[in-house]
Amino acid sequence: MTIKKLFYIAIAGSVLCFCGDMLLGCFYPMEKVGIFHLFPAFSEEWSNATSIRFIIGGLLGVIALLLMFCGFYAISVLLKEKVGKYDKLFFIASIVFVSVGTLYHCVFAISAWLYNQLAEENIVLAKRISERFFTTFICVAFLAAISFIILSIIIFCVAIKGTWGKKRWVLINPLLFMGISIMVATVLPANSIINGVFDWGQQSLALLLVFCAFSKIPCTTSSL
Image (cartoon, rainbow, N blue to C red; front, side, top):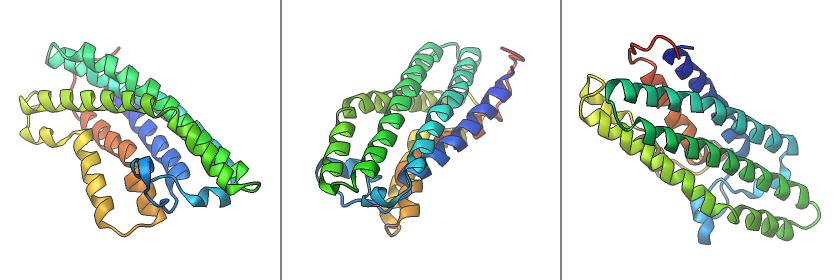
């Protein structure tokens, strides 16, 4: 297995993850009140959607994150070869991000499914149960956020030193791409497509761009 093939697998995983994100979050955003202004993918439209949508969305997220780990591993190999440091920290942060991200994706999918199934009986109860279930895991989500920030900082620090050959590599950063997505979402009018792409799908899109860029870097390690 070559480094380039690992990045291709990660790219496929990013696309699958984006598809899963669209199934879960491509709805008109719920009114942003209280703590849920942090999670705009919540929507009242969940009650009218088919339940299989959330099941498939959750499964795609799990498969996708496992595939995306190949890309993180490939970057750690490049760090070891071209920098000689940061590779172990990057690898550990990658494991945390993928592990916690998988759990987070499942929890979000289950929250949507619970809301969908209970809404016919009592929509107020459905909202209360699904939100309580989701908020139970918010602290776990912060672990994924912290590890994602660590990954982004390492990529930036290495790029700013010119390790990849060109200064424009400073712009190839998942955190920067997510920041741009957030700004775009605030400018564009609210609708289900924009909510799905820029609020819920921003991370998978950011990593897709990063893996595509890194797949172009030559590596002397022919196989793993």
